Length: 93
Image 1 (tube, helix red, strand yellow):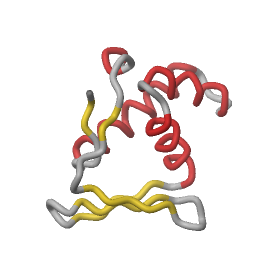
Image 2 (cartoon, helix red, strand yellow):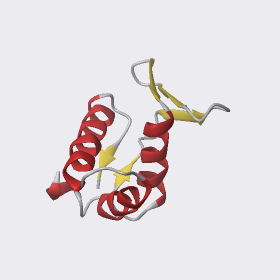
Image 3 (cartoon, one colour):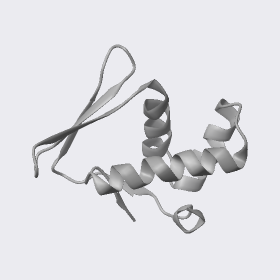
Image 4 (cartoon, helix red, strand yellow):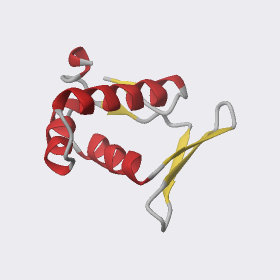
C-alpha cells in the first residue's frame, strides 16, 4: 500500500456512479455491465480518494475522521483499493 500513497485514482470513462440518499454509492461498469456498491463508510473513503491529489492525503484525512489505528486504516484502505481496481472502477496514476 505504501507505494500507492504517492498515486491518485483515475475513474475510467466506462464507469458511472451515483451517491444515493442513504449515503451509499453505486457503480455501473459499462464495459462488463456489472454493478458494485459501497456502504456509508466506503462512501466516505471514496469521497476522500476522489477529492484529494493522492491516496496519502486521503489516508491522512481519513485518520482524522475515524477512531482507528494507522495500521488498521492502511489495511482497510488497501482492501478497498484492491476491490475497486479488481472491479475495474479505478486505475492508479
